[in-house]
Image 1 (cartoon, one colour):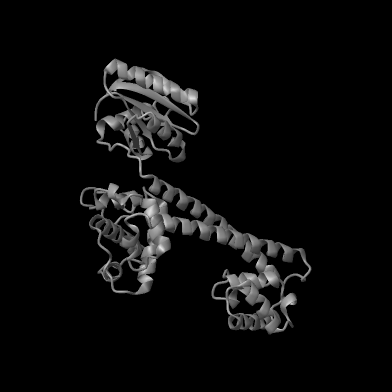
Image 2 (cartoon, rainbow, N blue to C red):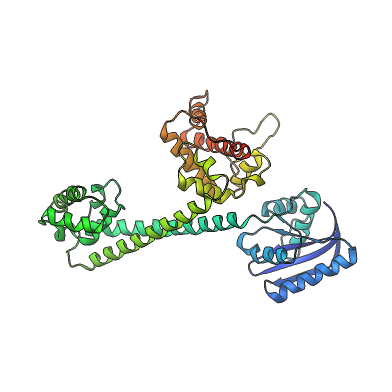
Amino acid sequence: MKGPIVSIDVSNGNSHFQCFTQRGTKMGKVHRISHTVEGFNCLKSKIEELEKKTNEEVVAVYEATGVYTKPLERFLEKNEIKQYSISPLQSAKQRKTEIHNKKTDKKDPESIAEVYYIKELREDEKEADLYHELRTANRVYEDCLVHLRKYKVTFQSHLSIVFPGYMKLFQDGYSQISLQLLEMYPHPDRLKNKQPEKVAKKLNKQTDHSFEVCLKTAEKAIEFANKTYPDCDKEDAWVAVLVDDIHHLQDTMEEAEAKLDKIIELAKATPYYSIILSIDGIGPNLASRIIAEFGDISKFKTRGAMVAYVGNDPNRAESGDIEGYHLSISKKGNKRLRCILYLAVTCSIRSRKENPINAFYQKKRQQSTPLKSKAAKVACITKLIRTIHGMCKTGTVFTS
């Protein structure tokens, strides 16, 4: 690529930039600006100065550094300045080719500029607002799940003191009926010798379950309460702590469910939702979150680009007679997507339905040098990505 550029090394709250009229020809020195109105106005004036000198359109090139680049992206977009982003890996590789491999704030813009001039980069395109909102909603939902997991760990720790063994009574210890019963009777001594009918009646009013289900649950819980031996008395401070844990869990679970409902609602407005939902093992949860992280799938021109975006592309290391195949995946991609797609593959395999994904898994497990289960599932992720790409490009649904 060629032409005048402004090369920007982005940091947290500030950036260093340098102007280039062409490859190897600098205009002025390296400037340091803060991400403020004054700082961005300084950047804008230098870009205008460069345009006047060269009589050509100036483009901005910067190293993508996650949330740190967002203010810069917004500034460039609002001022209609064409922008290109490069990955930190690309600039790092470029620095290694230099004889004096130095990384400094003043040197980095040169490395970034060199990547632009020797590589064929694609101009950054702004995604539709729907996909931006969808991705943001999914990131917030995943943060909520992180908090929920922490609450669950704390809850189980305190439960083992106050009501040991309680979770074994239920198939899902975090179900509505399980937490509601524990909230009403947070200590075995408060539940033992109670009449099952009275407990069931109270439980029936507080949950969506029928009286018969509540009665069976009450009888089982009362029987267990008479057997278990807690580590504290029913008036101990740990009991109040456990009740607080239950409230935190209930609130966070409701919040997570509401956020997931919003993600699904947004995903339904995309042309890919019904297509991805048709794949065996993928429900509304996974389908909507896959779309949230991929964004507009039409931006991926090839299946390989989609696989590389996930970071599921294989490493290659050829040397002499060594072919370099069968190495681990690069993992230089969207780690959230890898986790979601791994769940999707696992669900598909558990369904035991006859489909291309499961057939591919069995093939990898039964070949002459069989892969372990996890490695075979990772291989299936690539198969699934290619399937999704083909389906979304042609508008066809999944067939077993």
